[in-house]
Image (cartoon, rainbow, N blue to C red; front, side, top):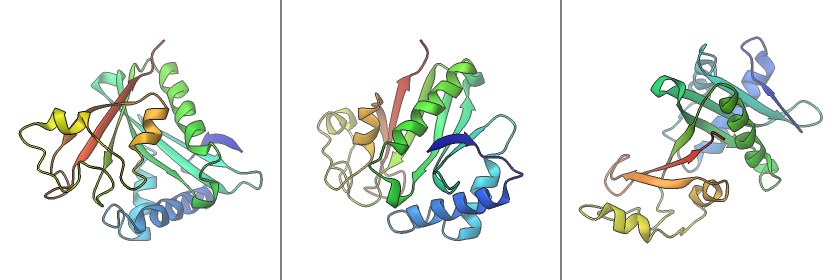
Length: 184
């Protein structure tokens, strides 16, 4: 496996990346990219001049993962968006390698913090289905992973929960905000 830039000239990689995005989110987050065309549009938006778009490719050149970064706060803070790994490649360190690579890219650009939002629209954590007001931090402190929510993956990579937006995706469907310091 190697990690390379996804470029606007590589139409085959664009289509593979879009298909990976669409298929990976279709079951649990169908509203994210409801059609393959929406996924292609998301990939094409990642080519904006100030963004980072990197793919993991296997030995035959097939796309097995994608990560993107978007600058905020004058480039001091970057949003990780999106991260996707093919189902067949999960559990092999591809996601970890993509995040580590993105962090290196951001440090080279002077970034100091990396953050992400990880929605819970499917009752995967103890935050879903709950009225998080008025004690949001108590709910965060007692969070439990009920069904393979990715927040624990990000915790293993050094991210911490820095907040929650209750009802972000509808009643009882919060967005969990995570961040980590990436500067040395």
